[in-house]
Picture 1 (cartoon, helix red, strand yellow):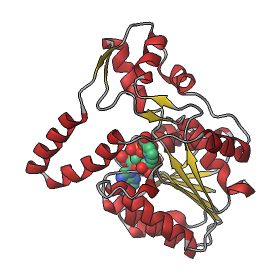
Picture 2: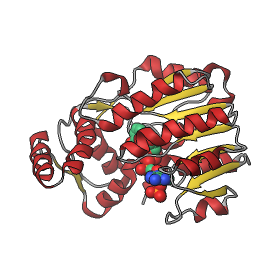
Picture 3: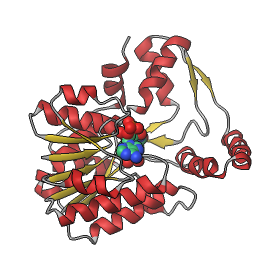
Length: 289
Ligand SMILES: NC(=O)c1ccc[n+]([C@@H]2O[C@H](COP(=O)([O-])OP(=O)(O)OC[C@H]3O[C@@H](n4cnc5c(N)ncnc54)[C@H](OP(=O)(O)O)[C@@H]3O)[C@@H](O)[C@H]2O)c1
């Protein structure tokens, strides 16, 4: 039995879907107010819980072999505390393997990005826990682009904040889910850390070009420089300091490059035994007209 946190999120849904396609038992930790009917229809065991309540975590972990921590959010309670509680409960209940979804660049010491800091501390805690683990550090998810692709289909407009030549290797969310699921039973993934990305390094300006090909329309790219974002962030900070902090992670994502090297692509493909899919292939599956 797998326990998946964040089961209603972009990655969590793909994990649960793929586990059920291979008829593996999975417990999906979801919140009562979330839309979890698809997971239930696929045969996942639904566990209603709040990750900010350690009692819920303690109960959710009982009887599971593998935990995949795939939840997200902007708070310390979710990014740090809930993961520490999950690791402690997994250890106490004899979980065989813990998969943690971290983030690419977590080891670069970005002080402004609280999500990165929390994930870095969780990584260290997991490595010292004595549990078998796999830490996956993904770049941006291809599924983030589905709603933008649908907007583009209607308007032809693409908003690109910051440097259009900045590079990333956006990962197919389905590939990442497949890697997360295979990690507990892949010997070469035990107690390992993987940088995870797509097979190609793309400049950010390549994304509207891909949309243009999929929808057969010339993109109109609106490209405000990063200082416009900084101005907005300062204004928000004057009204709400919490808002300014969570925008710190977004700024880190906009201002830096997040890609993996060809050697890292080769390592993933050799350990997990499949070819990573390009961004365009993923988008044609989910966003084609
Ligand atoms: N998206 C990216 O590009 C990206 C890149 C690198 C790393 N990551 C990491 O990958 C992981 C998955 O990201 P994602 O984009 O798939 O996440 P997402 O779509 O934002 O989903 C977040 C999930 O966490 C759940 N959640 C939030 N607060 C909760 C609470 N208090 N109790 C229980 N569940 C709660 C949400 O449930 P509700 O449906 O109830 O809100 C949802 O299922 C995260 O750890 C994220 O940091 C993401």
